[in-house]
Amino acid sequence: METLLAFLAALISLRLAGDLVTRYRNRPHGRAAPELLAWAAALAAYALASGALAWGAAAGWDDRSFRVYYLFGGLLTAPLLGIGSLLLAGRRWATPLGLLYTGLAVGVAIAAPIVEPVAGSSIPEAQDHLEFVPARLVAVLGNTLGTAAVVVVALATLRRRPLANLLILAGVAVAAAGSAVAGLGEAESAIFVAVAAILLYVGFLTASGTRPALAELLPGVRGSPSAKREA
Image (cartoon, rainbow, N blue to C red):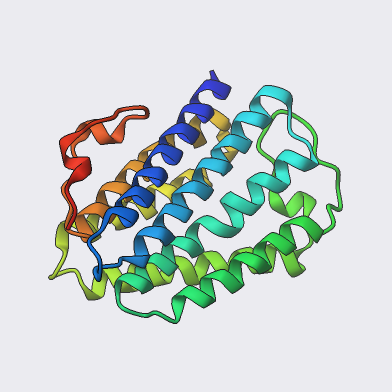
């Protein structure tokens, strides 16, 4: 059951990330929305972290599945969400910043030594396997600053986009709660991932002026009329 739920959460997140990329590509000329790409990258990272959950639940955790989970779940998701919020606020310097941070995160996830080999069936705790510097320090800074960017932009534009910002804040809160209960197991974490991904997706589309249909929230659904509407 844990494997199936984690895999389903990965499919949902990946489906929604792909939809955001499609919407970015289909926008009218001169109305580019780079925040859609950043948000798509965040949801794709969420999907890959969920895939690592499914991997760990199915085959047992090891160093490889832990590195994938830590990179996409611990290092990238929240910072990419923050980059998207900054781009929505018109801060174009966020694009090179996001690319620079992503490169740093990938390098850290690959090169950081694992001080205690990963094994077992429960989600590994980072403090048991990674030194604070650099891996955990980068994660703390990236998650703190990324979440702060989401919250600050959402609160600053709450009157302009109340529903969108409340949905995005709710998605971030659910994601944070999922991280807090990771010790309960892959199934519980996967449920939080799926709910957070859906909340964030609806919030992103609402912020961009698009009203998503309920059918768009389900993996594999095609041909939804609202999928063709753009802001």
